[in-house]
Length: 487
Image 1: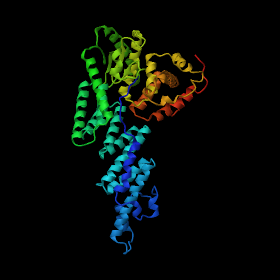
Image 2: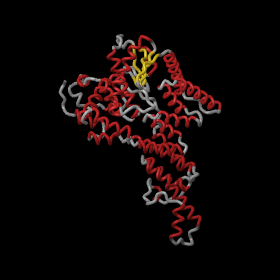
Image 3: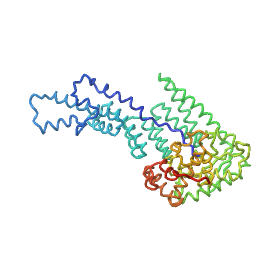
Image 4: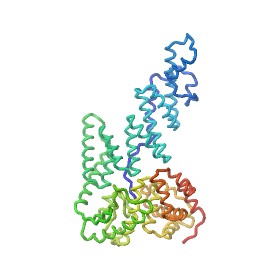
C-alpha cells in the first residue's frame, strides 16, 4: 500500500468570495455610474476588452477630437473603460473562465500597477486557473499559475505549489516553499504539511522543532489579539506529539542490515533473519525495476523498517486493512498477524516486493500515478496470481467482472475496508491486461512511465496514445466489457 502524506490544497471555489470586492473596492457603485447598456453585459464583445487610458491617448492622436469633448470627459471615458474590463473579469471568473479573467486583469494591472484590488483579484484568478489546470493534468501550466499568484502575495497559491511538488516527489523543494510561507507568521496549514512530512520520513528532530515553532507562533498570534487556534489544529498538534513520542521510542534501539543502496532496520536481535530475507527480496525487485526506470536517483535509497505488529498501526497511521505500507520508508509488520499466526518468510518477502515497487516508482513519479496503476504494478511484482484476482471479483457474481467500479477513480486509501479486496483485484487484472496489450512488462511500462513520470505528459494523453483509451473506465470496458468465463 502506498500511503500519501496528508496535503492541504485550497479549494478553488472558495476563492470566489474575494471577487465580490471587485466592484465595491473599485470606486462607485455601478448602478450609479450611468454606464451604457452594453457595459452591463457579462462579457464584453469588444475587440480589445482591456482598453484604457493608453488606447484613449492613441485614439486622440489618430482621430479628430471635437472641441466640445474636454480632457475631463476623455479621462472619465478611460476610467469607465477600465471599470468595464474589471467587471468583465469578474463575469469571466463567475462563469469559470479563469483564463479570461486572468487576461483581463493582466491588461488592467499594466495600466494601474499599484492598485491593490486588481493585484488581489489577479492573484485569486491565477490560483483558480492553477487548480483548473491541475484538474486537466497540465502540471507545468498549473505550477506556473500558482507561482505567478504567489508572487502577487497569495500564500494559498504558494501552499498549492508546495502540494504539487509533494505530488511530484520533490519533497525538499516543497519544504522550502512552505518554510517561506511560515516566515510570514503563524500559518497552521503550512506547519501541518511540514510536520506530516517530517513524521512520515522519521525525521524526529525536525518534527519536534516544527511542533515547537508552531506552538510559539500560535502563542504570539494570541498575544497580538488574533483569533485563537482552531480545535482542529490543536487536535492535530496533540496527535502529532503522540506520534512523535512513539517514533522516538521505536528508533532508540535498532540494528541495520545493509546491501547496495538498501537498508533494513530492526529493533531486536531475533529479527535479523527476517531482515536478511527482506533485504534479499528488495534487491530482487530492484533488479527488475531498474530495467524499466533505470537506477535510483543518487539522493534516493530503499529503506525498510521491520515494525513490531503491535506498534505498526500507531507508527504508520495506516488503515486497518493495510498489511504493509510505504510512506517514505518500506514498513513491514513482524510478529503475529490478526489471526495470531506469525508471518511466514514467504509473506514477508511478498510484502517487501510489493512495497519496494511503490518506493521505486515514487522515486521517479511522486504521486502522479493513480492508485489503480501503482497497486496493479505492485501486485505484479509481488507475484500475485491472476486467477486469484479473478476469483476475488467473481465471488460477487458472474457479471461482476464486466461492471466498471467507479472507486477505481479515487485513491484506494479513501475506500472502506469492505471494498479493498475487489479494488486490488481489479487494479491487478487491469494492469496485467494493459501489460499483455502493450507487448510485455518491460516494453509496456518503460514507455508508459517514461512518458508520465519523466516527461510529465498528461495521463489521459499517454493512455490514449498507448491503449486507445482516455481513462480507467474506457480501459475496463475495453478489456472486460464482454462476458467473462469463470476461471
